[in-house]
Image (cartoon, rainbow, N blue to C red):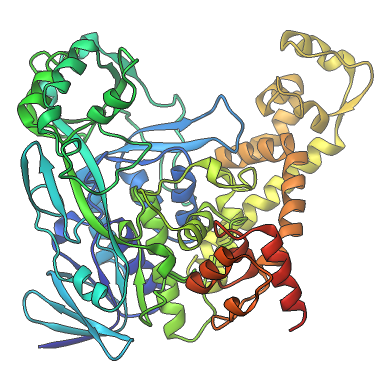
Length: 626
């Protein structure tokens, strides 16, 4: 039997779901192949979306017409805006999710997308025509032909699970690994390496004494991820703070001689910022305790996730140590923690579109590129799906710049620097993070997506209404002045200096002690002016963005000037056949790396480790010579 599609997406994780939806919504006929179609976008690890910098990525996907934000809003158990005590560039939304509702919502969403088919099967080989992809072959013997293929294999490519001295093949617990694809691509010249990740025990809540744990509630007025009319979570579930102790550490140490992490059976490097519990107590031997988070997996289940207690130690060691944590003395587990090793491909083998340099129309997205996290995977999947479609219809690609999005930072880091450990997004990776806030993702990206034909007319009209409202409110604050007698008592109460003469409200808003709510209290006329905006469906995000953009206007302006100054390098293309080795005036290291990585622009070249500013200056001279 033969099937034909424009695009085949291999893998039904977060990257695969976003890739398939984006390409199909743009008009390509798409087939999404997954080993388990009842586990689409399954939350194999912590059932949460967002977090530091990751929340910004989810909002960016949503702003461009992706679905991760919408699905998260429908399955949220608890919402928190992290880093509120810091500047707005650091504010990051995070939602604890119902993992089963999340997956089932994704399936319903994909089944409603025109041009998109789902198939439960296992891809065993790629079909090629020279160095051009032509489709895939499956375990059931079907050959599926396509004009492009997007590989989003997650941890399934030659996946190997480790629990103590036991090791076996698996993509995640209870599911088979995918074999053959890595070997086939390696034979074509692709660099294939191994990484490791892990997950902790899942615990039966009926055996936990919650009364001795510290409750961690969600935000009093929870926000949401999507810029559409989804609702904030109505009934939040609490999470809990938990701490290990020295007795826990001592028990864990008894299993070190059987740990695959310490005995050398695990060769892949794990995520530095999310180490296993045994790795933490080994590396931070001076600490008497480590903080953990107990988080619900669903609204209608007793299963809880102990965030921070990831382990590949023998099961009896994990459970014995768990029983020495306060509140967990009689805890029973649904399954032990485990580590998993899997194959990934050096992402410097990719173009900025996520198409491989080696094989035409073959795209990689997600953990196969060496990243970790649902959000990073989903962002890559979205970009790969869009670009696969755009190339097939002969349109210019979608290349997001570092100054436009965290997704742009992510992809640029991957293709210029590569990875030697699982890549995780942080706000510190973005040099323009005051511009890349979570609140303005729609302003940055919805117009781009709208021009592509992906973001809907309704999304664009909503953004324009929001921008018009924001401009009107800001104009009001700049034009209306207040008298000292009118506001000085309020100012003194707030701990800020009194006025000696009339001042416009915008200047008052610049003060750290004052927010929009303060101005409403000081000036009832302003409160009446805002009443019509309070009724808008996006009122909360509108007022938040007004406040942030006005308070930090000088910083925003400086970053915009920096972007304008440096963006010229990203607009200077470099030919893929440029002979760098003939330019003897740049360093040998730069010649080697530029020849291997073939950067698309001078800006990309400048970010390659080992390429110095003086090397870039020489290249600029060559470009000016034509």
